[in-house]
Image (tube, rainbow, N blue to C red; front, side, top):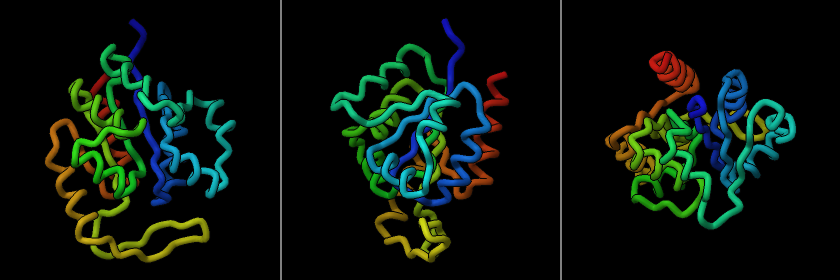
Length: 178
C-alpha cells in the first residue's frame, strides 16, 4: 500500500489564505482539494493553479458525487486539513451536510476516524482578516461564531485560531506519524 498522505482543502475564504498557501507549499505528500469558491478566491489573490500543480495534485469540485472521498476508505489519507474555511462550510459541516467536495471530504474523514484540522475564518466577535486589497476588520455574526464553537466539539476535529496555530498543529500531527 502506498504511503498515506495529507488531504488539504481550501474553501472560499480569503482569511490569511496567502499564509496558509505558503505553508501548504512547504509540505510533501499532500493532495489539494478546492471548493468552487476556493478556486475563485485563489484567482482573486493571483494564485496560478499551474504553479501549485507542480508541487502537488489539485482536485477541483466538478463532480456531483465527489469521487475522491473514497480515498479515505482505503487509508490513502492520514489527516484532513481545511484552511482557510468559510463560515458557510463550517455551518454545513456542523449540520452534517455533505453536498460539496469539501464537506464530503470532512464527513468521510470523520466516518473513517481520520483527524481533521480546521482553520475557520470566523473565530472572534471582532477580528482582522485579509481581503484582496489588504487587511480589513470584520465582525462575525453570532451564528457564525456558534458554528465554530460547535465544530470544536466534534470527534476527530481540531479547530485552530491562527496560521501559527495551524502550522504547529499540522507539524505535530505529521511528527506523530513518524
